Amino acid sequence: MEKVVKRAKVNEEDEVHTSEKVLDQVEKDHKQKAKNLDTTKDNNEDAKEEQKKEEQKKEEQNKYKEEEKEEGPSEYLIMFQNAEGEPVGDQIMLDSRTTKRNLVSLLNTFLENEEKLPYSLYIGDETNQSEVRSSILDSVKELPNAKYNAETVIPIIYKPEAMFRVRPITRASTTLEGHTEAILATNFSPDGKNLATGSGDCTVRIWDIFTETPHHTLEGHTDWVFFVCFSPDCKRIASGGKDKKIIIWDAKKGEMINKPLSGHKDYITSLSWEPFFKNSECRYLVSSSKDQTCKIWDTITGVPLKTLKGHTDHVTKVIWGGEDLIYSASRDTTIKCWNAKKGKLARELKGHGHWVNTLALSTDYVLRTSCFDHTQKEFSSTKEMKQYALERYNKAMSKKGHERLVSGSDDYTLFLWEPYISKKPIARMTGHQQLINQVVFSPDGQFFVSASFDQSIKLWDGKSGKFMHTFRAHVGRVYQVAWSADSRLLVSGSKDTTLKVWDMKRKKLMFDLPGHADEVYAVDWSPDGEKVASGSKDKRLRIWKN
Image 1 (tube, rainbow, N blue to C red):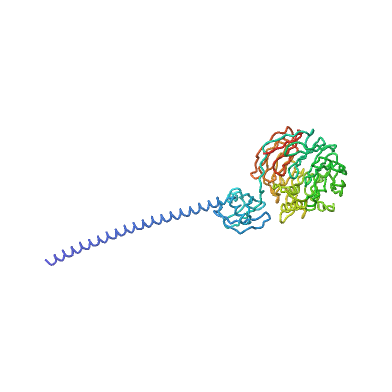
Image 2: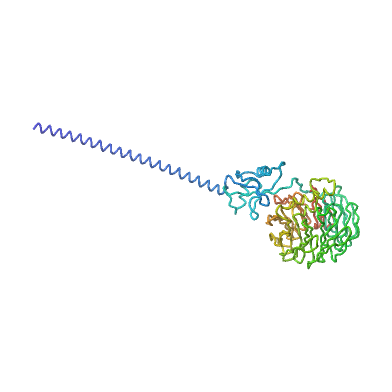
C-alpha cells in the first residue's frame, strides 16, 4: 500500500512536471509566434518603406521627364551652316542655355576669322525658322512643330551682319524750301554727298547735304518730273517725267548735257543705269514708259540704241541687273527679262492677275552704290573703282544662286523669282488687303519689304519668300520705304503726313516723325547712313538725322 501511494505521488509529480513542461513549451511557442509576428510586421513595414521609396523615385523620374519635355533637354547637338546649307566646323554638344554671344564666338572660331564678325543666327528650316536672340533653348521653344531632342542634330544657320551700325533718325534737322509744287522724287548720290529732287514744278534741284543748302536748280522739263537717278559714278543725274523726255545733267555744274533724249511717245515711268562694273563710263541708260516700251540709250550721243517691244500695256518699272538682263514690269500683268546686249526677250514671267506696279532686285543696293560704301575708300583710278564695284557685287550674290527679283501687284500679291535660271516663281506671297505700291530688298539681300495702300508694311525672307512680320502704325497709304545701309532700320513715308522709323531686328516701331503738312510722296536714306530725305505734297524737302 505504501508502495502504491508512493507511486501515485511519483506519477502525480511527473504529471505536474509534464504539465509544467507543456506550459513552458506553449509559452515558448507563443513567444516565438509573437516574435515571428513582430518580425513579419517589421518586414512588412520595411517593404512598405521600400515601396514608398520606389514610388517617390518613379515620381521624380516622371517629373524630370515632364520637365525635360516641357523645358527641353539640358544639352543639344548643333551644327553651323551657311545660308546655302553648307556645314561649317564639326557637330558639337552644347548646353541648351548657351547664349547667342557664345555661339557667335564659337562660329568665328570655326570660320577662323582674325577679326570677330557679327552674325545673325537662325534655328530651323526655311518654312519653320526661329532667330536666336538669347539662347538655343529659347529659340527651340519658339518652334512648336520642330522635334529636336538631345540626339537630333540642330542646324544653326548663320548670316553675316553689317560691321557698322547706322544710328536711327530722330529729328528733322532742316526744312528746305524752293520747289513750288509737290516733291515727287528724291535720290541721294551713291557717295551720299548730294541729293537730287524732282517736282511737279517741272524742275530738278540738287542739294548739298553737308551744308543742307540748294546747289542748283535744273530747268528743262516742261511737265512734272517723276523720276531722278544719279549715275553710279555720281557725276551725272538722269531725270524723266510727264513731258516724255529724259534729260542728263552734270551733277557738279548743274547743267544739261547735250539735248534731251526724245523718242518715247508717252510719259517716263522709271530709269536705270547700266551697272558700273559693266561699264565705268556710265554711258548707257534704260528707260520705261507708258507707251508700252523700254529704250536703251547712249547718253553721250543721245541716240536710242535699242527699243524693247513686247508689252501690251504701260511699262511701270525697269531695272538693269548685273547678269546682263534688263527686267521690266507692266500693267499687262507680265514681267519680261531682256538680253541687255542684244535687246531681245530672254524670258517672260507670268503669275500676277492684275497690273504689276513694282520690282526690286536682291542686288539693287550694290548696283546703285557701285564702289561707294561705309569704308569711304579712296581710289587712285577708275579701273580700281570698277574692280571694287565688281567685288561688292560678287559678295552680294549667293554662292549657288543668282539675282532674285520680287514683284508687287494690284492683285495684292507678290512673287519671288530667280529669272536667270527659271520662269517659275520661288514663292507666291499673300497677305496684303490692297494694292502693293513698292517692294525693296535690304542692302544685304536677306530680306525685302512691301509697302501697301492697306496702310501696312510687310517683311519677308529674301531667299524663301517666307512671311516674317507686319508693321502697322500708319493711318494712311504707305507710299515709299527706304532701308538703312546696315539693313537694321527702315523708314516709311505715308499719306498720313508722317515718317516712321522701324527696328527690323526687334520688329517694332522706333520713332514716329511728324513734321510735313501733307502727304509724304518720296523717301530716301543716304548710303552713308547719316541722313534721310523726304519730299511731300506740302512742297517742302525735309532732312532728318540722329
